[in-house]
Length: 238
Ligand SMILES: C[S@@+](CC[C@H](N)C(=O)[O-])C[C@H]1O[C@@H](n2cnc3c(N)ncnc32)[C@H](O)[C@@H]1O
Image (cartoon, rainbow, N blue to C red; front, side, top):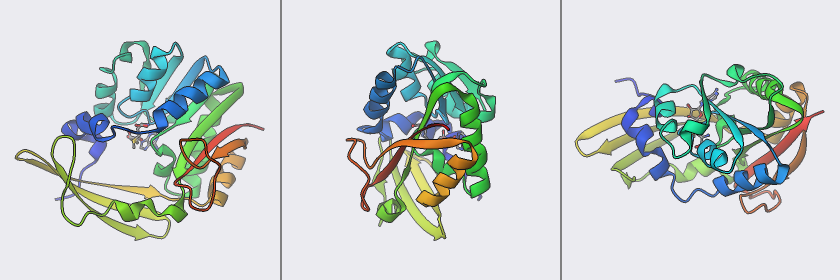
């Protein structure tokens, strides 16, 4: 059977927040938005909308855009989901010249699988920024090889069941296949993520007319070093 899409599987999407418990990026992005005084925020690949909901709860005006309806239906039920404007689709759907801050969190930037897709994604994000606005996002540092920890020897417990993961590498692409179980139900899903080089990221940003303000190497705001788990970028139009 062809593996499915995790984000289009209602039972898996419903467990995403529980499976991501303890994530440290949320406070980072809430602090960043507050520090920048960003009134209007657009979140590309908003997923289950947890960050959008938290941002709306802090008084920001928020638009969340997400290509999977299954994820959006979870998002709409978040605590402050009714205060967020939800859009079905990708960054093309965002209004132009609107946002003080555009976000791509949860490593959404790694879903752009080649230079052309990344350049187009960055250009759409830039289009949504009003003058003086910022784009913030992160990718995993390829040198930290996070995918090595994704492969499971057997099954690992999730919030609602178990998962067994196989990982394959093809150049800068990592393909993982996950076999999920919740009680008697099982699903096999797959996804491909790109681990772009710093040069690849900067080339795409440059083609979108964006330049880097600051980078961090982790959610504690530590500087980037060769072993940093994350490359977190804050950028603005040139
Ligand atoms: C790992 S989840 C992250 C969700 C959310 N941003 C978070 O931080 O929890 C990745 C999300 O990106 C979405 N996605 C995948 N490709 C995308 C694209 N080209 N544009 C926008 N979103 C995309 C997926 O549907 C999924 O909801």
